[in-house]
Image (cartoon, rainbow, N blue to C red; front, side, top):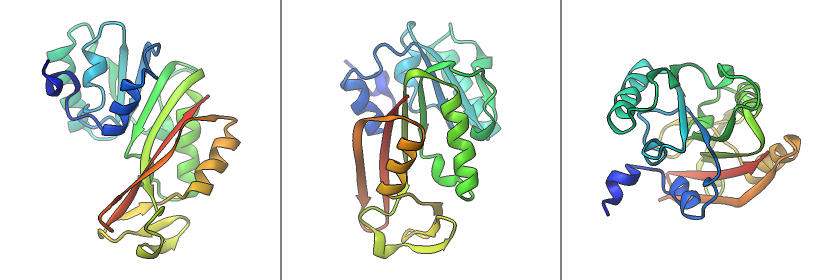
Length: 201
């Protein structure tokens, strides 16, 4: 079996959830901030999944449409649209799974983060799964410089909206959600921390 062909360059933590069978019953999937589609290669290859994607970059949408046409001819090109996470063009409670991988840390401030999250949560069905991986200061608290309103300068030289465990647990409670996986963080050699936040509606 060619795992690279089956899964592509999938995020290891999305892969982890697939291996655990979390998303086996999720029929309608949105990748919000899909980029070139690396996290939906697996889903596109299986006809039982209906896959959608949104990104703010036209070249990303062009790329993911080409990817889908190649490996999933049954998927309409218009399933992949130019758009903002905070203004998703879908009806309420449309998706069984929403993936938002390495996107939320581009929020400009707490208000922008909230608008993004409310939009993502709105299109998720009751009982649906939300997967996110985003920048945090967990394990690198002394290596980040606060710039105001949860924006930080990271040790790798980038500026990001940064969360911590209390912030994520508070948001989980505000959304009346539950964690389906404990919060996990990877520290990348004192440069940045990336945290996985998995909640169910």
